[in-house]
Image (cartoon, rainbow, N blue to C red):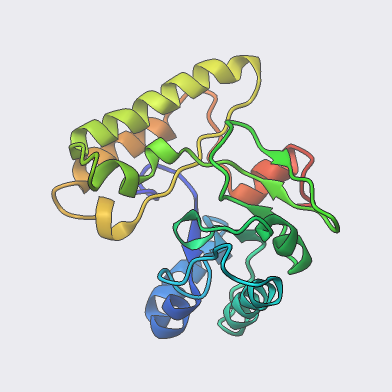
Length: 218
């Protein structure tokens, strides 16, 4: 659906998925190699989020192990999206220490920005929580696929209008096991086509957006 709409994407992948599903990894790697996608590190496992109960050394080891094991699978990810947006109060600082260049955990703006960290550099590319398919399609909201698709198209239209006076970013998370269901993918694919045809839109990868904003060396 993304390819058909002329859109590129960020492929968020956790270590266990990368290690246990080489056929999926290979398909995504082909899109990355062709410039259609970009890898995003998504932790060790979806059921192992970061949290304040972890010690600093434990959390740093988690981040470093994620980078190392993904690299062993041929995945070089500059960006980070925590499982279920999970973070501790130290995570941004530790992400910079572990060598990550940006995070997609902070849902608080329509433009990227530099985060303040004690050492190194870290940028934030904020996603839209209200467009996250899990937030929209699952309980307690549970809106219809048609309503979700309409929200995607309306968001693109509104941001394109606002973007005439200063660039706006439309970043959101979709999970194939949710939007890819046969009873959902039709309206979602149509919304993606509308987004791809948005006048003045740029189907950019996260690192390209941040590079254009002067927050990342491309």
